[in-house]
Image 1: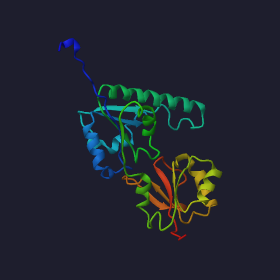
Image 2: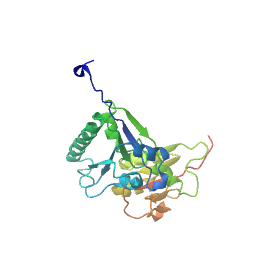
Image 3: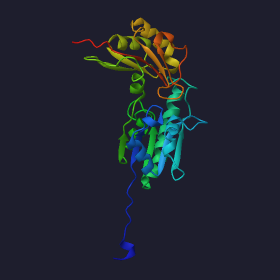
Image 4: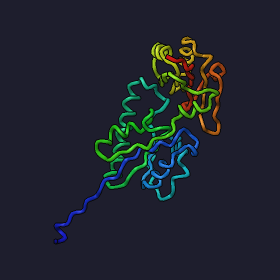
Length: 250
């Protein structure tokens, strides 16, 4: 066979959505650590001027041999998500980030795309997955969620017997929040931050304030756990309200 007739086949790389847990590196799974070690490229989302929470958690797994691919958000809290400019900027950013990853994948380099908590539980990785999974081999490495980490800090189980757990985003409107809480046996309210005043009113109106707990930065060095009525007036992004169920039989 002549050299001219020979062809070189380059296998594409695999995109891994690597869940790194809620904050404490000890809560990363063995599979997550092995996946990071095996991938030549490590990608992660971050705010401008920072390396991001996921990168911090996985720091001990990243070496000088890795190609690092930070994806810097163009906007975070500068504009509300309802603002039309927010949507345009963030969607264009995810498009651009996906194409940057696609270049490495097409060249045969697998990528560990880091995500706090679990990649498929409100994770930013979903934006990469939706853009790339139809083009390249893609796998998700599951992880410990902040929700379950927060629940582990409470003096009683999150769900007992026939309790139905509701996971409620704090970004909902106040009436929608109230309806969801009134229908819940046990509940976790995610995405607090600037939504805390609205969420506080809904929890009070639903009559759940005495059962509720406020957890901030679960598993991190500066974590805070307190009854809901003692919660601060403002909350950071990494905070949530957890309302254990009562365990009633049906």
